[in-house]
Length: 135
Image (tube, rainbow, N blue to C red):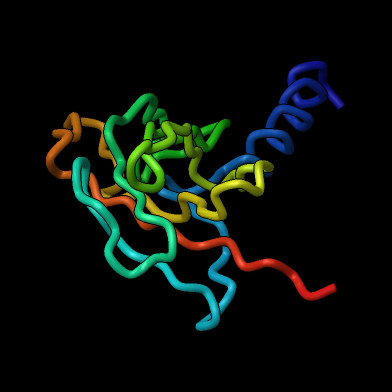
């Protein structure tokens, strides 16, 4: 085996294992979980805890139809509850370990593209209530 091939094989294995589509989300747990899609500034109406996304803090998702080593992430700032609202940070695909608010960010649209920047008014966030597991 030539030195070039010996170096290329591990690199190909690593890169091949990391290809993910942009906009990846956590698996849907089924019909028992309630979720709602809202824009920046809108408040959820059907969830037990009102959630209002206020800002996109980070959208580094891999653009659609592009091979990436890292899938990227989306982080948003959101207000939970009513007066006084609690400001929290939610990250796509990463359940929040705090049990005090019981919501998670499970979807973000639209997908990113290479050529365009997403306008804040174009974002849609799918917020899902966390369901307590039976004991």
